[in-house]
Image 1 (spheres, rainbow, N blue to C red):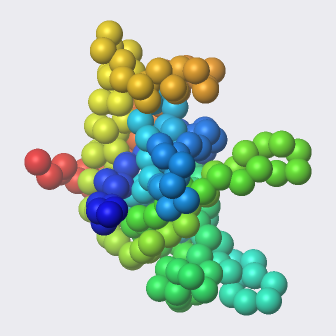
Image 2 (cartoon, helix red, strand yellow):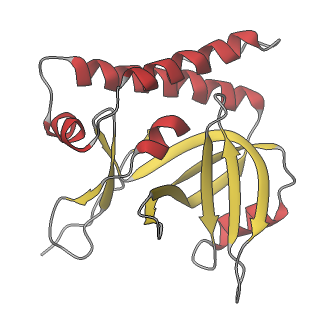
Length: 199
């Protein structure tokens, strides 16, 4: 008898780290076992939560609607989201929203290997919601905090299995992601309307 799986927590992550997360794995041989991407800072992610500026949308489907959205975070990094008939609400949102607009996306990471052997990472959205600037700013602060926490754990003596896995799979300096987090926070300070982070 199998118990109903609980929904995974949605990880907050900036585009720079997300797009480097090209390694996927399962934790069991069960066909329905969740597929995780391994973040280079040493955490697994089955769902992610991102907020950014939707800069363009396009119906890239051939036989039926299949919407692509381009979402940019404060560092200029890009998330690509794809929604079709199996994500009707998200597809409808991409169809109806007029870029540029702030959006919040919860979705599942997907990897795709190109003919050249590169791995592209995208998001299959569970939900896309139009949000305001305050929500975007709060996401930036919280995502920076989570990223710096992951880096601290990555660099600590008590590395867990996912940190070790990241060390084996990626030859990427985590300093890149620390810089991305700090640059994102600085971008908020540069704006005229500083938003207070909620506790």
